[in-house]
Image 1: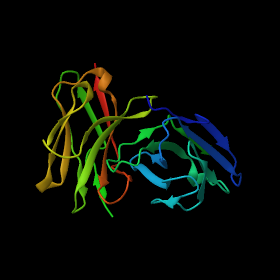
Image 2 (image 1 turned 135 degrees about the vertical axis):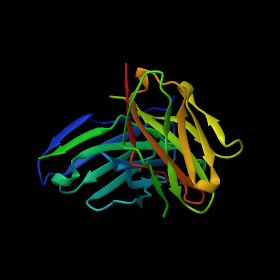
Image 3 (image 1 turned 60 degrees about the vertical axis):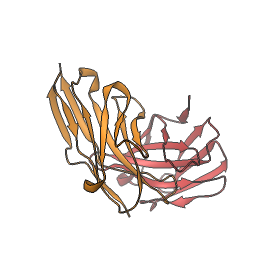
Image 4 (image 1 turned 180 degrees about the vertical axis):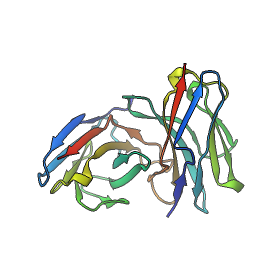
Length: 113
Length: 114
């Protein structure tokens, strides 16, 4: 069974703080993804990575950065958190097969006050 | 860039009723299609997928979906729902040639009343 874990289920941060969200997968997947989930908007891709130290912007990268130093770990960084970044953040991983099936973590609900 | 539309944001129905959720996508090329489900408090998980072949695909828990290429649609169906089908359902599209990127629809919240 594929397992994708995220460091926190709930997180409360103040405006301007630097925030790190961690994601770890145990299936040796090359691809990893960060999404945010908002009501009515579904999941929107923030960043993804096809390999260690490689990253590509998704649809809404502004205000975020990522780090992938090891294959199993993909971190999302909010350099200076703002209230409009309050959301549910989902991490996913997949094999490089073109079929696109992704496996998701439980999500981190981030509140920025 | 492709987009995915789920026309119903909220659906309320009684147990044993039939369910159909619409999904339309905009992309002219070949696609892989998915339905994911998120039960309350649980991970997003794959319900079913279509890559090629028979356009009627069956997934877990009695769900099925039909790919109609001419309509750019991939509607999800279940003949008789149960209270445990209460969840949020997401349609997603992977455009071949776009790597493993998925584009998701806005989701449909389904509430099944006992």
